[in-house]
Image 1 (tube, one colour):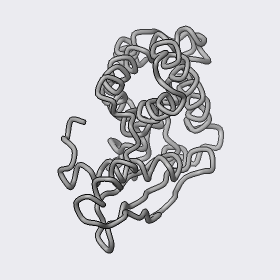
Image 2: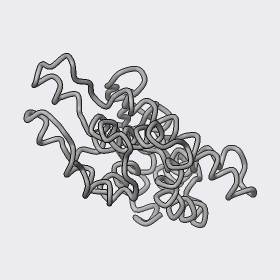
Image 3: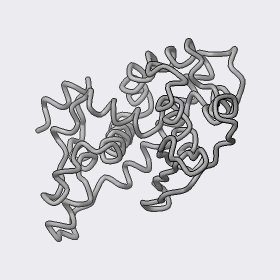
Length: 230
């Protein structure tokens, strides 16, 4: 069961039921009305903590020249939903998701894929321990981390946006909370960066601060004030 996926993950589970659980979206439980089944939400919660710990340890050891603030900003980029969804697509997790038919159109959505990646990481941790979780995760994190640090992409996007907005338009940006969804342990915020009455960019994140940074980054790209690759 899930042999192709396990080959893609680079490991084989001792308890394959953990992998199946990691791939089970709550919509499947709702549609089957089977109270004996469980979704991947608890594994996602665990995987989120494992991800943060491994990421922090790697960054601390690999970049002694970075300040605490730069380390935090780099980690925020590495663990954001967009990044995790990219990792999930690289592993073709979307081909193995167990979802309700009503959620089929959302199967490749960023939030679902990011949550599934975290759940799989949590399942690996439970099945084979922290070292196995590190061996699985670090090949995904390392190239992106070195790119972020080399290009200094961890710089505060809000500060850059404010500086450039004032230089180009003489307007100080403001931020507007559009929505917040999800359970308390996995809330998703959507924020718009405003230049006067104009929406300059939109971002999302696990907290309001991250969403504002993403909105500022989108605004910088939309205005052409930074390159798409930055």
